[in-house]
Image (cartoon, rainbow, N blue to C red; front, side, top):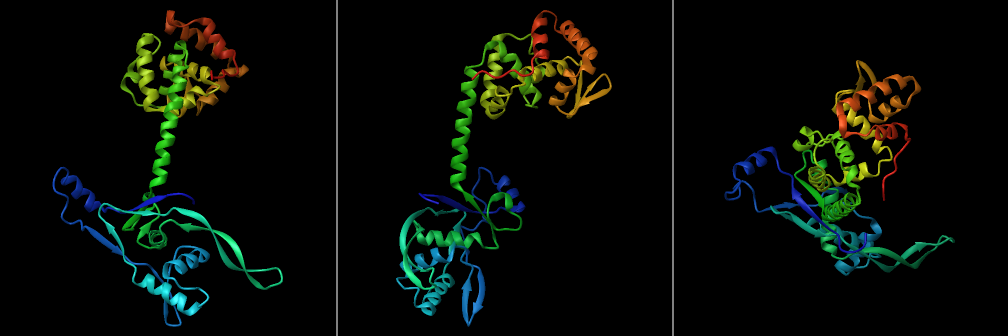
Length: 332
């Protein structure tokens, strides 16, 4: 890890606390919540009367950190480890109710370490290691990583009292979300107005919950209305729009969605039916069924029924091209 990296230690809220917080919304903060909670390092074992702790970091990093922090050489083994464990024994990690922010960033440094050579002898050798920007905060972080009361993230909270939140993951997710939104909207601006309807049907087929999208006959509303709905959905579901835009079978899936909307085939959950016969449990299997020579009679009947249902809003040649094409590659 290089550069400034920050995590926050949060209290894991119990069900009681959540209920109390809901009841106290807009009021003075709940009185049961202390301003500060103190965590101590976890005791690992006792060696020859000396307490040892769970350090949570590689030995080579620990030695360099404490040589510099305590100004003591590790070559004096007994005194060094006694000093290290005395440090941990007196360490109190104070977690305020708002969370404890810790800088865990590291930078590479070169140190001389005793390395065993090919001849079996040990020699001081320049070695690059990662050294914390803030050693005391890094030590606290490593202690919390191996602490029985601390979950490594919010999703792993079980009976833990605290959890670690990686602020950099949140920041990166925000950046990724912004980039996804920009890409999706760029695709939208590059979308031919004639394809607005197709993408609206595909988004509806993906299960997007939007009242206007659900109740509209997308084949009869105006281009302006299609544009307004699609603009809103692209902003709300950018990743799904990117998926639709890059789907090489977009037009074939659009055709399936038209058949579903006009009740020419039915969809119950993931299962599709023609009349009462199952034809697949995914849109890809329905497309395969439509292209199968054994389905030619059903395919012709479906096309004729769809033309009748849609009347002047669909071009027969468009339907034929959708059925005959293997794929329809998206516009880049």
